[in-house]
Length: 162
Image (tube, rainbow, N blue to C red):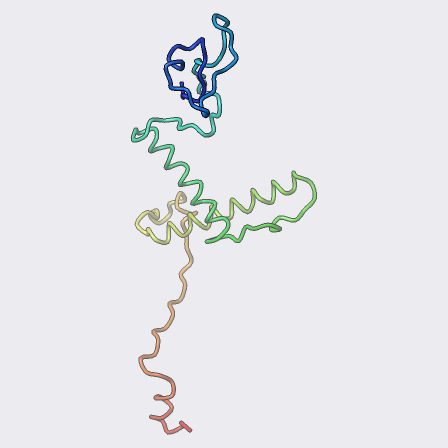
């Protein structure tokens, strides 16, 4: 009972003081009405807005971690490793678009695995171990160290400064 109306079938509402904001309904005494009934919703009603698992339990933490993982991969696709945006896959028919996006997602997954293996070289297999073939990262030449002095000072020391 919210206390917004007064109903003769609901004695608790009739105990409320009369105000213009609490009018009396036109319900007949003794005839069933819905003024004092509490609406009960089942778990399937608005299921998307409900919290499925009790907060703080292992199931809720795992579910939350799954959501974070999905959002993180979406960021990898659109920002960090791939540039997936509107108009990236332009082809007619849904089947072709799905195939193109599947290849795009697979390539992003390969980039993520390659970068992970580059950061963890201890996980690479021994020589002759084919299980670590995916983690093969080609060696890249290191960049030279930046100059400690400005270019104009180097030119002045040689005598070429103007």
